[in-house]
Image 1 (tube, rainbow, N blue to C red):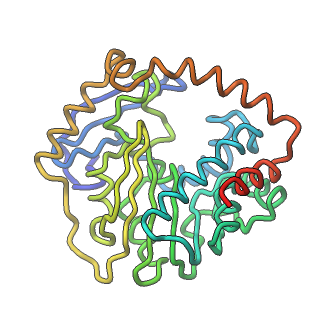
Image 2: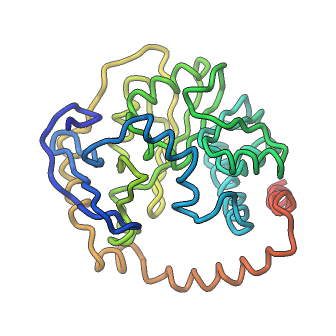
Length: 307
């Protein structure tokens, strides 16, 4: 197998176990560009079939969001919109790729954007239409046409077999000077338990430097935000396509050190894993208060707190 980013074949083994199924899953670090990926990469057809039918059930054990998922997604939507607002992206025609249950599409449509979403799972996309009357289509990114001012992808890029090819499609869909907001797990973080890092559904594991490199032909980086296990990058569409720019030797060295140093000690102390048990108690109490509300009412309360 060759690296998706640099096309090289110099790899170091990182893991051989799927954190959920405990089955075999080979994940490698590319010594040439620092990309962390499965070895080997599934085909686009295999991925499309999996996400259309099995993914939500495998990873959340549900065919549509629970109320606790709605509440968390609504608050995350406000936080993500705050990141856009801080960078002067406050309106326009917006496409949310991998829209899930439609919470971000609905919240953003109430707070300044003309929003639509695309979601491969029919259960989740139908939920968005029925609960929020959100403009959500069932399908893949390849099914989208038209032009947009803003495209958002939250925890989607890590599931895609060829991220460089995907950035070309996103470039084609954006208007001149359009904005692209990507959020993925940060492979360099210590905030993820060593036993909960590598999954069949996650094909690539990004750092800020590898995500920026994958986008570099088509986008320039505007803003980066790293909080715990989450990496956010806002990109601007390039007016002309450039040469792909790989991470520097310094970036590669730092990334390799951080990825290899994942351990329970670093997770508990540097990643503040000790706080997760306390946070879990708070979440249980919070979830119990949602049972009397409808999904749209939950989001409207969150939206009104912003106004």
